[in-house]
Length: 169
Image 1 (cartoon, rainbow, N blue to C red):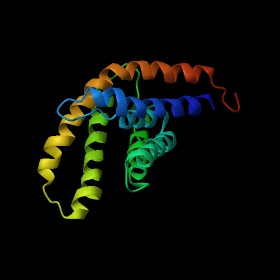
Image 2: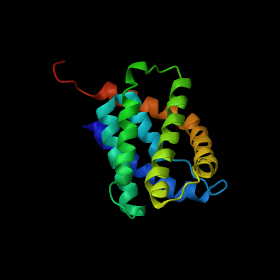
Image 3: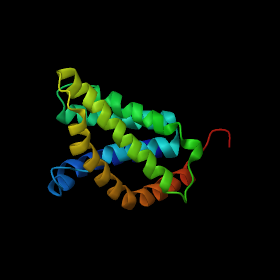
Image 4: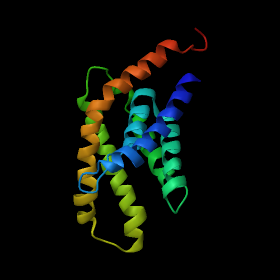
């Protein structure tokens, strides 16, 4: 229960930071995607189901406040959370290389899904330009921010695990 509440608070904080503080610190009109990072971390550290639910609510908050279509981002983030949860068995605390690779793949998948749903279906076929400008710079910016946020989030999830009571224990 405590982990769900903390994750809910983290989703709200990540959205607020992404749309306020980091929006003021744009680099070439690019903002790091903290909600995607949170979805990735939740799935990778806690499994498919948790990643899926975190992704759903991260996408839903974006849909509610800044999208014309409710549910599209929810589906995209939920899929990314689920896919990252498939790699939970490969999770090791000391290793940051695999998480950065998975986050990069998540960012590319997010860019691809966004391109397909928002541009390709509207007959805009210049995928290379879309990948080159907003996707790659956002990927780099998100990775740089993730390097600094990954360890504190890892410690927070470990702290929550120590305090949780497991059924049957």
